[in-house]
Image (cartoon, rainbow, N blue to C red; front, side):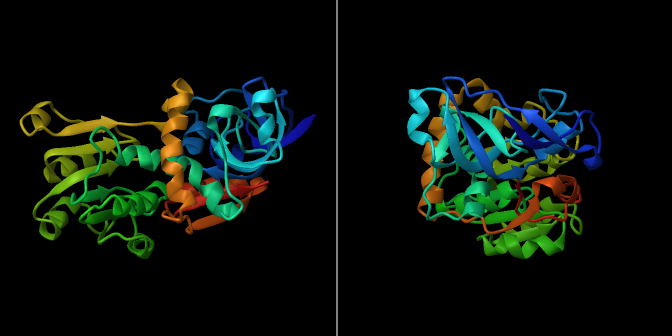
Length: 326
């Protein structure tokens, strides 16, 4: 049977998206088919649309995570999920009315959790939990600095960082209009980098004892300022390159102070070791089901307005998570 998707046949700007009628293969023994109720917009989708990120095609159908109802199982192993409400990560692009997903990467979700909250959670929850537990992880009483703090990962990091006992949480945002959302989630300080590009000097005045843990999705020139702030034995976890440039560090900036720079990609973990990704996500899931993390900064678009959603996320005007509704 055919299903409807929003995809493209050539790389480019948001305008390349087209409505398509495509065939979805039956699920294999390790998969289920899901009727999509929501999918989300991630920067990885933007990079895929520009040809900067691995994606199969053409036609190219982006989309990483979803909320939906399981309609078909490829084997008895997944039969118990048919009719169940699940969140998860697709084996096929989720910008469509249906998606195939591995049984390792599908998770039942209670009806008590709203559809938008559930739909916003998969990539944010899994990624953020992993970032804050990388290597030795964030410890109670440590100071935490978060780049792009008004984005989905940023707002989730503020909340989980507070749950983990961070002493002071400092969020960096590009524009002043984003500050209130970050403070509402529990940050102690917000710095607007558009107004204060030399943010390290301000943080030294606010937190003279220094920063112990940094989440950096910008890289590029931010590395030099982050290393001015990072305490001995501190950790900088990099998970993106929004600036378009890699961060550069020399070994003497690390070994003399026992500092660590670590990288993380939840997408790479899902692709190369789905069982480990499942184990990690199951550890993070109680933060959602127990109500310890909220996803209330959400903007909805129709799936068929995906071009507008991509233009919005690239404008850097958005706060929180963008969802698409088929």
